[in-house]
Image 1: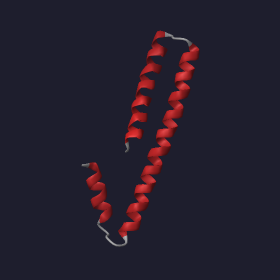
Image 2: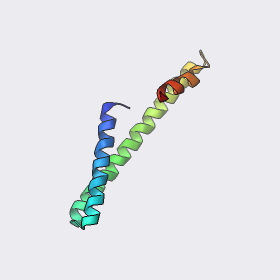
Image 3: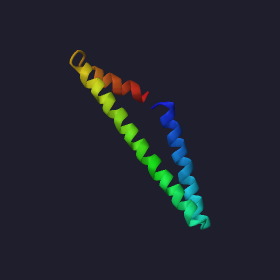
Length: 81
């Protein structure tokens, strides 16, 4: 994942913590709803971007597998390390 996506993930985590805090403290409903809306929007963006990155990676592997059948195993192994 790139830096922008990691920044979005961190922002999503901060929003989640803020939502939990607001819910426990019985904060204003408007602030909670705005935070919830931002959290959901960011969650959808992250899900969409990671899905697209995965599909792009799969297409790259599929195009290379004809030439080198071991590329799919090697690539997935190296990404985990």
